[in-house]
Length: 206
Image (tube, rainbow, N blue to C red):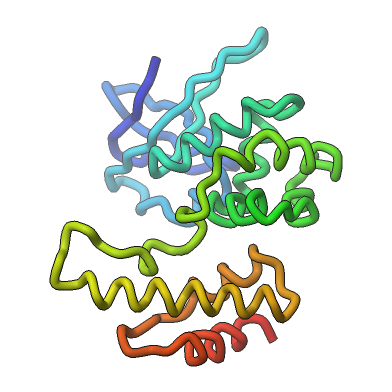
């Protein structure tokens, strides 16, 4: 019904961002990770929304990207995971962290979310792991930019260095979730070797 809402950010309270649109203040529930990235009060914000109707409430949930919105909707497709639980998961884990946990079958990380026990975490992995692509696990910085030919060689080099560093960290005993999160924090230059990326990544793990 609603694709997105855009307007001045009027107020924030709890997990609700109040967005003014059409002279109406709309309550939009957002993950805690989104709260940290909202603009200042009075500045314009655009949130991609999911409108959920229940017997006792009609609720808007909002996200800063369509990709994150899709993750929210995928979570709600898992048996036993409703909108509040899905929001709680995306508050405890950023969408990229969640994808990493799913593909690496890291139920322990997912179970950190409030109200999500080990059984639900394992069910979530079983239902969603085939929908997460390996190429989506690493940061965009590692992926070749097909639209910019001049940067192709540099981007490919960054991709190789990043992937090899992640593989090395996993071989050292770190989970894929931990490894990719650490590599993501490294500012990888075009001339960096996998060994250099690995060394910098370890600084965020030790």
